[in-house]
Image (cartoon, rainbow, N blue to C red; front, side, top):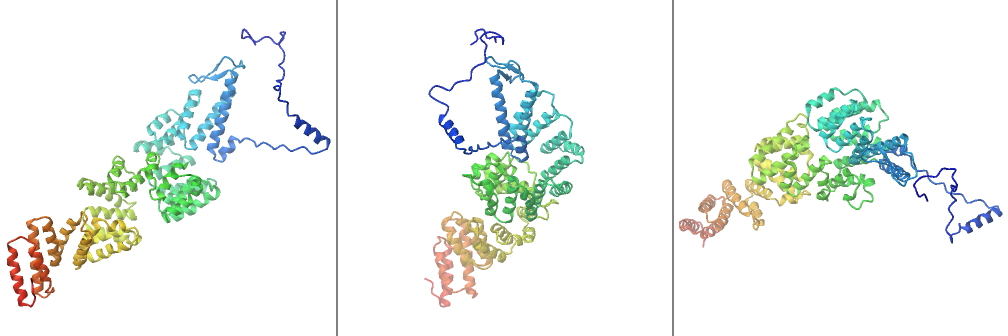
Length: 624
């Protein structure tokens, strides 16, 4: 051991080469193995072949295979090894200055060279690259910030790469400011182009649009902006042209398939997607898009089957690796575990918020749905439609004309737009718009134009029947409402208050007052029975079904002694008597009329009964 911390000169006495370390006493170096080897050599036996150790993976191979998680693991392992070796040598990097500093106790007297520092910076760049492509924008941004501290202003392109990470994180203003610190390059222009779109700055958007060149990268950026602005046909044209020019760019097939999916050409999308899946059958993006096409063409089970390679081994939807797959599995399973999966994804996946709103609407949680949508500015037809539906539900729940007006405007905006006017959702929007305006003849024009596409959809059949009833087409409306009783999924609608009220009115208006009265008797114990009694009393009176009008007014009078109910009951009883006298009703109905009159405490009852009994005696019918 040295007492003064100085190293003695090489020629000094006592300085000698250290001896090889001996094995501890009691642990001989495996003599049995030595004896076995000697014996085998004496017998001329072949030596046992030693297994060749697998070579460690190379970073270039991992990047080429798109194994970015493996690349991150490899680079972090190599960086950790380098740090441990540096610490053992007595030199480490100062986190504040980025320079090497000597730590007492080490062996190496010279600081690491520039080559080692450059090698570490190169590995950090690969780490950030892999993290970015793996979708870990936080890790990539932190790595680029570390590189900026190390390199200073020697590599200004690092600011552009950091801006790309900020764009991926949704920090658009910060991305714009960070990109401005980088060099003026086509990448900077593309970054600012996307940031302008995200911040809805049309002036900057057009400025950077004009600076785009006819290069593959710039044209891909332009196509993506077209896609994000719902100009799917323009995006498709660019992608197809680039695919013709670059046959090796297989990923362009996914972009084209995605555009056709948005254009509702699901079969075409699947056909184009097959070319990419033939080369990369494990692509999460391509498999997810294929599942979405299957969902549109068939159902959730068919879609879920396509995601089997990505969901195998997961205990539940919450444990899936990809956010997009977790989101879509909730959709494919009809909203299962929506409240656990979707809320954390609302800021990552735009559709997550919309599907969470739909979940709340399906569970009649209108206020929760409205709170999710009230601050969101719609940018796509789907968002406009959903915001209109939510405002319509709020208007109905609160009896708010303001919400109904907002809903009507959203529906009209979508239905009258050039891109949506001839689509099924566009015509549904115009029907909803006229429904709110109570212009039911116009509602029927739009609904009948798409009726063939919804032969067994209970919601569509219900809305069409209600529109027909409101337009006075009671026979067709009655047939549509009765059709719901045979349709799968119509159970909720059949128990709905509005459904029963309209069905009762259609029965009365088509001369089936008895069927309407039987419908009331089934609902007699419900909260809506009083409203149905009022409807039956007035509609039966208007259509001349005086017996059932009298029964309804009699029940109303017993529930609420309102003088108007007695007036209606008296008029209905006189109406029945008049129909009997005219030979349009049976004489024995006068007994029912007399019983209804006797239940009232009104001085006019005696006079009415006297007249009815007198006519009965003269015509051979006894009324007690």
